[in-house]
Image (cartoon, rainbow over all chains, first blue to last red; front, side):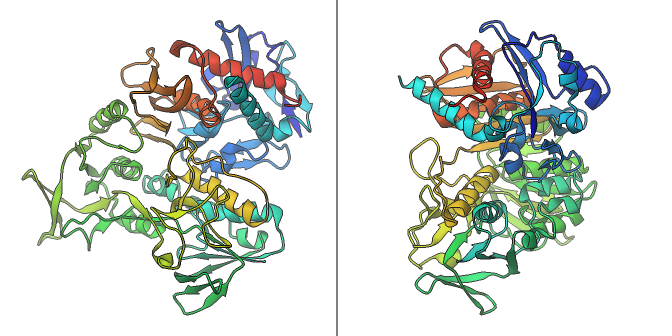
Length: 159
Length: 417
């Protein structure tokens, strides 16, 4: 399956991706309506674009008490069925990356659905930070790799 | 192998699904005393609020059991006979197992108040409860809710949204003691009162009386009384373990299990609200009685029953809900204590709050009220609490620290960790 890269060394925080997403998903240009979010952190000099990684064994999908989160068999995207979502926000608490947002108008959770396989954010990225690539071994085992990452942080801690 | 799973809610389903990821062939029988088609208790208040239709309460489709090559039967388990490896059902039938998962969940408790039973007195726990309550959820009716935990407040909000006159009676002098700290509970209390609910704290109900005109009259210790059309009792739950008492299984508050969800008896596992499991934060084993813990422990049990070598990291309590036009969430140890540092977000307006508790730089819990962005922050903190990763820095650096972690993770993607 294909995934969207989020290259922190290339992103320039132009926020084109946010507008592209908002326009595609909500028909307007409101950052609040975008499923991808970009932040610049001055203290640590980081440009960070963030959108869903469509994890294998996704935390959000596993935990949703309304069975409102499914995997799209065609694109592989983890999607929220808004008609089933009750807006309890459990998925927002479950995502360790902060990639699920709340739709304040319809009072349901909202996230990236890979635009049916043609992500609009990628089309409008000017720096190459976002690319829609085949990435079998890395993103696929996101949950396992993330656990290793946390374990490593934890070890560094105790040094 | 013959597998029996008792219960088909979060833990039972998690158990079945994880078991089938490894073992496609063993015979599996799921026993339920409620609907064969699995439903979600969490959704019942949303159904009463009419946010979701009845059919959306069901969280697996009708072909679910056949797809998973499992049989589902309806029945009440009377007795567990570990020596014979059998269970006895109410209709007299006996079923044999090689491995058994007890995922019987919990049931609401009724406080010992004289008169608190009979007509027009309900819990909000089962599909049947919700169906019974739906009849009474009519605009203009009066409802009293006893207790102020998650279920009670969700029920109160549903009733308010449907145009009922709602009173909440809480024994303690504050709401939600197991899910919020005092000041956060205070903010929510204000929101609840502003919404038009009559919320009475520190109020002891002494007696409930059926009146001649078909109403209920509550007498309080302070001498006041309140008349209402119906009552919802939401004063906590207890594990469903009556059928296994005295069979030799180790019970404390619930069935005591190890990190593989094994009880002390061979071949018998437990998960969900009925199981007392290791805590993510160390200390004594816990029953959090929460949906996420039920899913996690059910999945661990299922994998282990199928022979996988997995181990539970421990339950980390996490609560979140949106009600009264705000969102509250908490996890871990969220109450201030002498050995804990508390980071607060001072940039938030008065009706919002975010607090993070740390012990020697390591986050151990957090609690928030306000926008869903705060819940996102809690989500990003959660793995750091579980992993005991320190947050070196100052409170105002929190977002930058979390971002630095994520950026570091993205950089490492695809590389071997």
